[in-house]
Each structure stands twice: as C-alpha cells, then as structure tokens.
Length: 481
Image (cartoon, rainbow, N blue to C red; front, side):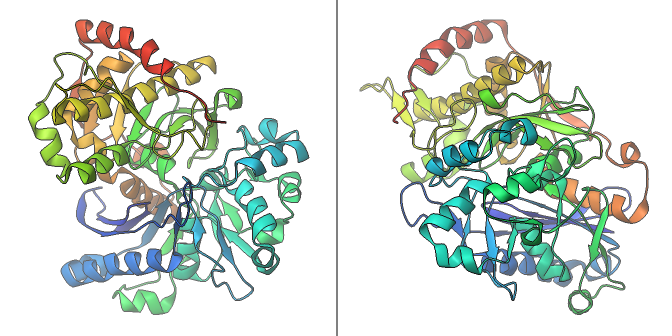
C-alpha cells in the first residue's frame, strides 16, 4: 500500500493506492487563503498540518487495515510558497503563496543583482517564485528575515512535521529561483543574491528517491506496521505528470486546477524565459518540464459560482456537452494577475461585450473560453521554444467538465483527453513516487499512462471561429504599469 498526499491551495487531498495501482480510498480537507491586502495571498502552515492529519485520521477510521500496510508515502504540493522557520523550526509568519503579487519590485532588483538568473534557473524572476518573496521580507519585515533559519516550500514543511527532516525534491526546488536547473542543485550565486546560503535550504533529492521516514509516533497514531519511507515527491504539476504517465518527451498535458498550465516533458532544457515559459526539473531523473502557466483557471469558475450564488455544477449543466458557437462575451481570466506570457501581477480580469441580452450561460461560457484562450497564449510561448503541442491530456478539477474540454480542443485545435479520476492526478502521482522510493522498480513500469475515458476532437467550424476570436481577445489586455 502507498499514500499520496497533495498539499494544494484549496485543499489537502490524500489517496490510498494498492499494489495494483488502484485508488482504494481518498480523503480531502479544504484550506482557506487570506488576502490581507490587494494582491497578497497567504496561508497558515498550521492549517496544512491540521488538514493533512485529518485526512489520515479519516482513512484510519475507514480503512485501518489498508493504512496499516502502507510502505511508502509520496508528497506533492503547491509550488513557490515561502515558509520561513526560526531556529526551533517554527513558522515565523504565514506562508506567502505562489499567487501573491507583492514582490514585483524585488524581481527587478533580483535580476539586476544576478544577471545570470535566467540562464541558470531557466526562468524569469516573477513575484510568484520564492526568491523575490525573501527580498520583500528583508525589506519590509527585516526582523523576520533576520530570524529566518530555514526556508521551506509548503510540502517540505509538511514533510518536516511528518519526519523531522528538512528535505526537498528538485522539481519543487526549481520553482524557487534558487536552483541551477541543469545541475539539479542549489545555486550559491542565487542564494547569495537574496542574502541566503545553503544552510537556509533543505537537503535535495530526486522525486522518486527515498528522502526520509515517517516519525515513529505518527506511524503508531495511524496504526502502521512500519515507519513508511517518504519519497522526495514533486511539485503539484510534476506530480500530476507522473500520475498520468507524462514522463517522456511528446506527452503534453493541461492542468485545470486553481491555477492552470500547459506542460511538456523534455529530456533537455528548452528555456524561453523571455516569453515567461517556466523551466522545472521533472520528478523523474534526467527529465525537465517546460510550462506555460496561468494564475487563474478553475478558480475563475469558482469565483463566478460565488458571484451568482450557485454551485459550479449548476452553472455548467445548462451548457450541455459542446459549444455551438463562441460566446459573444469575452473574459480575461486575470483575477490574480498573470504569468505566461505577460508577467503582470497587477493586471486584473475583465468581461467585455455585455449587453441587455447577456444571460448567465453566456457569461459562464465566456469564462471557460477565456481560460482556454489564456492556455493558447501558453501554447504559442512553448512553440517559440521549439515545443509543439499535438495533443493534450487534462488533469485537475476542471477536467470533469465535458463542455470545457470541448472548448479547449477547439481553441487549441488539438485532441484533448481525460482520464477517470483525473482530478486526483497529483496525489496519485505522489503515491507512485512513494512506491518507487520503496520498490526500486523501473520508472516506466510504474508510471504508465492510465486509460483515457474520453477524447474531445476539434471541430473544424468551431476551431475556425475561435481562431478568429483570439486576436480580438488578446487586444483586450492592457498593462497597468
């Protein structure tokens, strides 16, 4: 038996997977995000621990025998968050999250201090990444910066609580701007540019390697027969890639979670930081992921549901399974700023083309199409790096909507596929990494592609209609700085 624990932005999801790679149980607990000022996004690390422990306590209550047999644990998590710990490994402040935009000025300072940043990390300095957050802390909360002895990403903090050891995997670490992406090791120059050293960083391992073991007292709490091995794990998107077998070149995929991304595994670095293409180490040794990322995806639908006082299911149901034509309303999904291709933390969303005849369904469709158009921007940025997208698998909560996947197929003009249980892809991928850390099996034998349950093919008429709309949609973007 193997556990996968995904520390997401909106929830902690835990899955229990057997030796035949069947998910036999899952539990989820919601997380809240605070925004003390406009553009700020924070979470209390204690809430992550409470939520993760609650999922495991629930699994013990319902599947005690299976939980007792767990041999390996994999972790995945939201990337880029800055969790600052004191000398006693206690958090000094709430974690600054990936979608926090406060450190835009610090990004410019960082690139001036270290001109080699883009060449070494494969990324452009942006507020979402971890390093600029530390420069912001040094300027605005100097007493916190001075007391900081350890900087951890969210899932590494969870691992610290579970094991007592500070360990991070290279995929998550490559979203910090402190990692030399080619060497898969911390960059001393990057750390120095933010006033840090390796002593502030956790030990690094590959995602499928054993990192540590579960504390004995926690193994007893959950009735486990042994102290399970905890794997290096992965950032949420690399873990999702492992969950759907996207571990080799040619296997592109879309993540439709709180944020969104269009990603392609590569066996070489194909960086394009000027177009805000992200370069991350994969959770698989010798592999990388090139990604175009958008800050708001399924969270746009959640926002709309709150606005209309309806559930997401109630919003989607009247749309049916396929669009007949593009919505006459256009939506920019920049509710929290945007990454690819704009790198603009202060831009905000927009609805354009409203009229007296606009109804709820028209707006819902426009929101889904706006996210799809933003992913088309990611597609084009990847193409500039030499990466062509011929088809795409979809994971994340948004993958449940047939209408949305149909829109994606037509906007991107490629076949789009979904899997059963695609919304738990990151947790399932983490469980696979937990298995590899214990078993030593061949990676390709474990990280197989699940069976696709549905394929959405582009429709020539709709593809042309969306292609005609895309330039006008892009014209709506206006930088605010």
